[in-house]
Image 1 (cartoon, rainbow, N blue to C red):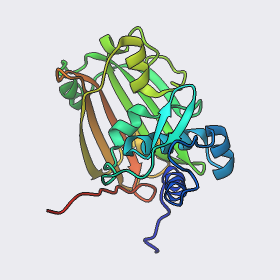
Image 2 (image 1 turned 90 degrees about the horizontal axis):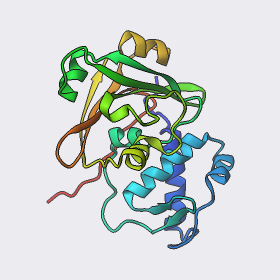
Image 3 (image 1 turned 30 degrees about the horizontal axis):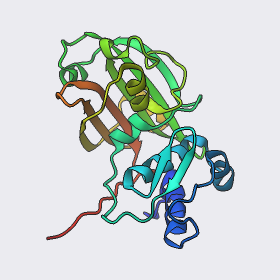
Length: 238
């Protein structure tokens, strides 16, 4: 069996845009094509394009201005930031197809511990399945304390157009300060295997999002099929 896997579609879109910036096709200050134009050009979903643009912005290649578009900054002077799956999930805009369910549940033991609440405390679980080429490519669950979720749209089943981070900042003036993230290779849970359509091992991500005081605002867990995802890091060797 070949061990060569195609990179995720959002990474392919990112690479194409980076190459155009480096070649001068997109010069600093230029506005990138709209999300709709990129969707048509690359024949991918809007969520894929948004994720690519969000990651390019985090790495310093472009700057996104709400209501205006994305503008080229140029090749970053420093090596690109490492991939941060937890933050990407919190910032990713949702499509109508991605959110599978939102419900109030009793916090499982490991989630309660991370949220610093008693086991079985009611929390909001926002679960979504993202797809790549028609195939499930991730099962993501965001767990919110009730005091964070109530009064916002994170406890409603409709998609969040601008993602969880921007929504919480706009509605409750909550700011993300840092993320603690753990990645492991593991077997999917029974529910994850059913949603992914496969019992094969996954890359598991478990992240806690904190404000400046260290309070945990939410917990994110994800199951990523190993043949659809790769992690890359760039760092200096001194």
